Image (cartoon, rainbow, N blue to C red; front, side, top):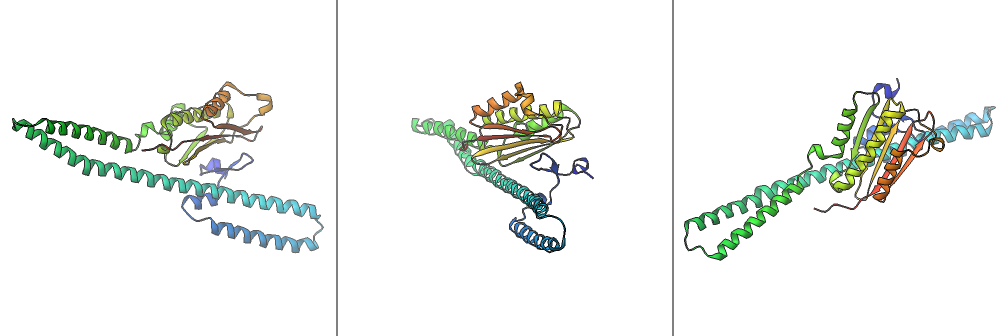
Length: 296
């Protein structure tokens, strides 16, 4: 059964076809790729040796054998590339989980330890001032300073807390897909890496670009399935929107208002948008935007 019809996880082949990939499944589980690469090399060598033996007694011309080997090698290494990309996504997710965990723990410790101690000290000083007529101005000044410190710690704790679900890029995309109604097309969204690495304004622009991509999928692609992949690294955001729809001829269609808007938004962020499509081969839109690390 076709993997799209079966609703299985997919990756994107460079000819525009979405397909299921075992290397990707292994990589997403955290398996190392070294063994897969060595196994692929060994398998390729064995197949070449077998084909060479067949070639000695076969009427097939050497050029045809060369075409077979090229096709075989390309197929194997495309799948290895998909495995490498999937492992990169796995590592980004691991980093993101660790990043979120450290921030949450730091926020808890600030609140439960330092924040609590400052609040207790504040209440004790306030009680002393209320019950002692001779409370000096220095003590009142200390109370003001403590109050300011508590406010600053509260702001820091708020900044360290994870963004609410309603503010995340994933939730915004999910909400848009839900608003568009039931499939087809079926939309899969995969976001890797912590969104906290990216400024709010940049994330908002990325959302608008990806939303326009999805609008085109719904309106023009006649697709059964589309995949949105966003990889967030410390230096850049790389996004891909791929569908298995009818595609189009870029030279004949030109640049629509929606595509022009996406390009302009990316260029404002010093990024780029590229379109890879052809009739009956689906569409892949690549978005690449550099980012500056968000401190704090």
